[in-house]
Image (cartoon, rainbow, N blue to C red; front, side, top):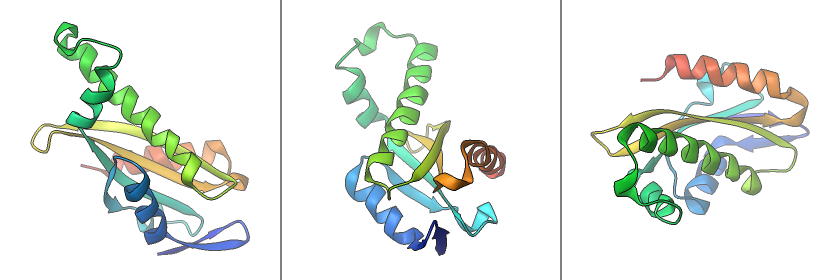
Amino acid sequence: MYIVFGNEIIDSSEIKTAIEDNSNFIVEKDMTKGTKREDTLAYQISITIEELNEIIKENYELDELESEDLFDEYMTMTDDLAMELEEIMPEEVIMNARAYKWDNSANTIKAIIVMGHIELGELKISDITKRLLSQTD
């Protein structure tokens, strides 16, 4: 799907490829059409628990973390890693990312990432993220 990004037109599949090629995230679903906007990109992404454990091991002993603390760490780390994707996105992008689920069957943390041109504003991006979160599994 093509979206208007400032003075450019961007193909959502190009951004999907950039995310998968430059991070440990897997794009599970292009949710751009679900935003019901012509100026916003959105994706459902996931990252494996194994990837997150490798990062956590650098700072903590996994055996010492209680399951609730580990869950919080997974969610926070997924949010942080998703926001780092901003570095590989087009200039003047604003983003919001929210981890929302530990999928035990796939052993992944799922998140929603929404982005648009800076003219759109943080509040609008945040509102779109909340709306998409309410529509996900």
